[in-house]
Amino acid sequence: MSDLILHHYDGSPFAEKVRLVLGYKGLAWRSVTIPVVMPKPDVVALTGGYRRTPLLQIGADIYCDTALVCRVLDRLAPDPPLYPAAAGGLQHVAAQWADATLFWVAVPYVLQPVGVASLFAGAPPEFAAAFISDRVAMTAGMRLMSAAEARMQLETYLGWLEGALADGRPFLFGEAPCIADFSTVHPLWFVRQAGPLAAILEPFEKVSGWSRRVSSFGHGRPEPLSSADAIGVAAARGEHAPARVEPGLGFEAGAAVTVAAVDYATDPVAGALVGLTLDEVVVERTDERAGKVHVHFPRMGYHLKKA
Image 1 (cartoon, helix red, strand yellow):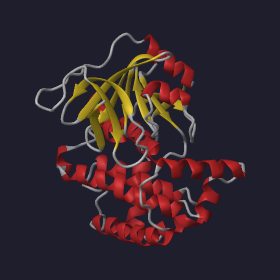
Image 2 (image 1 turned 135 degrees about the horizontal axis):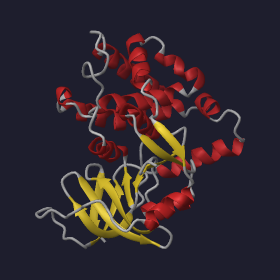
Image 3 (image 1 turned 90 degrees about the vertical axis):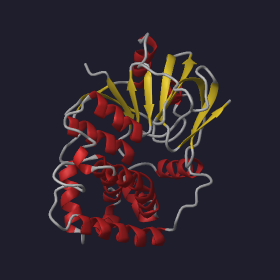
């Protein structure tokens, strides 16, 4: 049975990114379906407050944010590589652009009334209302663009991608996929779920072909697992992945700290600092059900401060 546990839900774009990486790597994993909206008591038991989707759990180590989750998966299963040397440093720049800029163009484009109707077709009306209310709270303080502005920008970005693929390359940076492909495909996958709004993709034939190639990797080999059982896995694990606080970074091991995203869903996670590098932050916390867990965050995009 696989040690990899992904906490996600079917309609999450960022979860689709990780599912496709799992498929590309050919990995077996256990699938925990979490609520789409708050409250998420079993998620909070593991994370201490972080609520974004998805999470990767390996025993009592909880990895937050797909930027870190993908690095962890690549360390565990380096072949085929997710960060091929041939793609160079620009693959990271492109991935960050897609996860932030492209994603936040796709969201307001999809979440206009006709898109919401397609996303929640067959669901009770109150569910769609609860989803919108939850996401409004989640993005409090962000300035989101109008649907019309989002459409204009999305068409521009699709044109850029079409041009990048015009020479016939199968993937964004050449013959093999890289992190930029998986980061770029998931906002477009979200657009594809939006019924008639997905027509915006049709004129871009190169982009559509590339998207099908990335999506063809599938989702690997998932097996269902309940959230209660996942918490039991964490509670039963008596050890954690190695972590250390590197000197010269402004914090001491064991310091009481909080970690929070800097853009949206900024719920802070409090704990004792047990790991800090230029790339990663690890805090230790104790939950009455999950026991002693280590919660991992990428350093970039998160604010670390003393409690």
